[in-house]
Image (cartoon, rainbow, N blue to C red; front, side):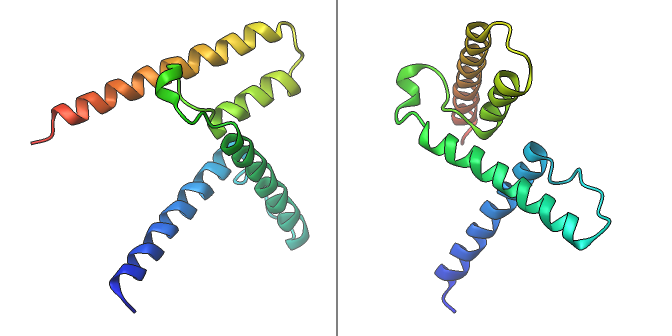
Length: 124
């Protein structure tokens, strides 16, 4: 098998591992107490569907040019947070929560830019 294909497969594996870790943290994939195969299977499918929902919403809501807006694109974590605060908890002030999300995304963008500048300054 050519080296190029092996590298592609290894890269795909890393993407799958990251997605699995994100799914465990965001959707509670690791919070089920396994008693029977059927319950484990249902819980796993439900958690994977929730993660797929977050990933699809994040990919459809991506800003093509986040640098011009001054904040990062919506991530699975941010969508999970917004969904939890807007849907699961009682809504007292929707505009306040949207402003908090906007502030957090702008802050993350500034932190990301600062990180990239520091990394480029330390390259030999």
